[in-house]
Amino acid sequence: MYSDKVMDHFQNPRNVGEIENASGVGTVGNAKCGDIMRMYLDIDDNGVIQDCKFKTFGCGAAVATSSMATELVKGKTIQEALEVTNKAVMDALDGLPPVKVHCSLLAEEAIHAALWDYAEKHGIKIEGLEKPKSDISEEEEEEEY
Ligand code: FES
Image 1 (cartoon, rainbow, N blue to C red):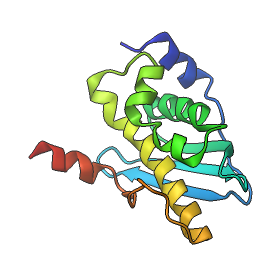
Image 2 (cartoon, helix red, strand yellow):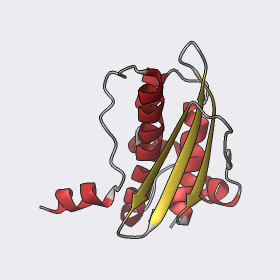
Image 3 (cartoon, helix red, strand yellow):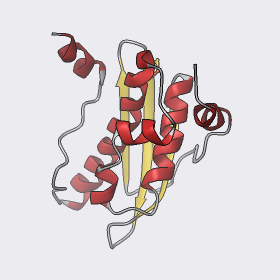
Image 4 (cartoon, protein in one colour):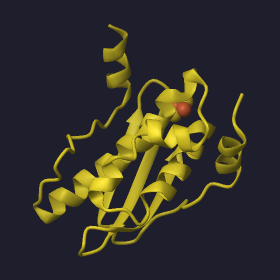
């Protein structure tokens, strides 16, 4: 059901933890399953993501996608990090079962929320970044109509 990469990132998640005095912190939940994701970003003066860590109260797919997402955004600029969509993360993991796709949205939205927090703290606007949702299940419900 799960690819080897998903199992690897679930069993040995990368970048778990917190960053003290992070440049940006974002927390996103999914009210339907009750899972929560928090992302920490350390962004340098050139707008490059030096470090990224996450903490989750989430399912295995949420752990694996967040682990991969943190690996993908590290070393990237803010603009490049916006291209790390949940689809890009799923591709990097060789796919996820359809019922678990929403779990990968948790990672994407948490990164966006952390970038939003960074932009607010610095009084800047990040082009292409929309105000993140604090609850991704709203988005899923919209899709059902
Ligand atoms: Fe909630 Fe996966 S079941 S994030």
